[in-house]
Length: 280
Image (cartoon, rainbow, N blue to C red; front, side, top):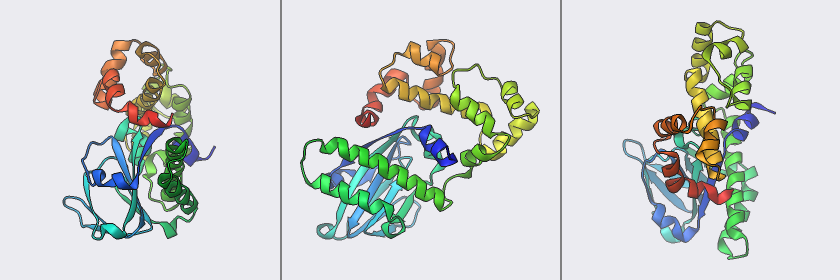
């Protein structure tokens, strides 16, 4: 498995397509840090506005993506000539998901730079325009395909954060990451991870932070929380999820989940999981 496949495959995301006529309701997006916003500009001109940032003028065909729910506004100088569709992207574990924080804050990709996406977009707009049986499910699946194509493009352009990708190719850290990914429920200790890396505890901690950007135990927590979100959305009870995510008891898991995600498991399921679950 390539390092990009390992990064994408380890984390899941949900998607919900808004039809062109519904994009008006998405013209003011707040900063929630959880739900990303993907805008597909098929034709016309769209202006993306953010506080303390230069306006971004986009000529279609192009896409603009805010992975972590950055606050922005959308203006259409000539609405009649603009064709646009929008999508909400929900990463498991929200903006703390390593795949989400590997992406830039804002991406603008003219579609001539991403020819592989054109065929996907043609199907998306054709499906969005025709109320056929199974349209919603197909649109959601196509949005997943688009996300993978976008991530691959950013990877090829060198725009992904180097941390996790570098760790997956580091001869000392790769075995550690692979072990944590494969056995998130193991009782990992810092010394155990350092032993896998064939390093001293202090040297391993420093090297991990320098390459990945965060301490090893924080990375493990993020990975476990992403797994927990996926299991919760599948309907598993908290008692089962807590064990599979490496916690000794449901209360300990609930405290960690609430601190890390910003909501209890049940609250997260009520408020954030329904959107992501659309594509399960």
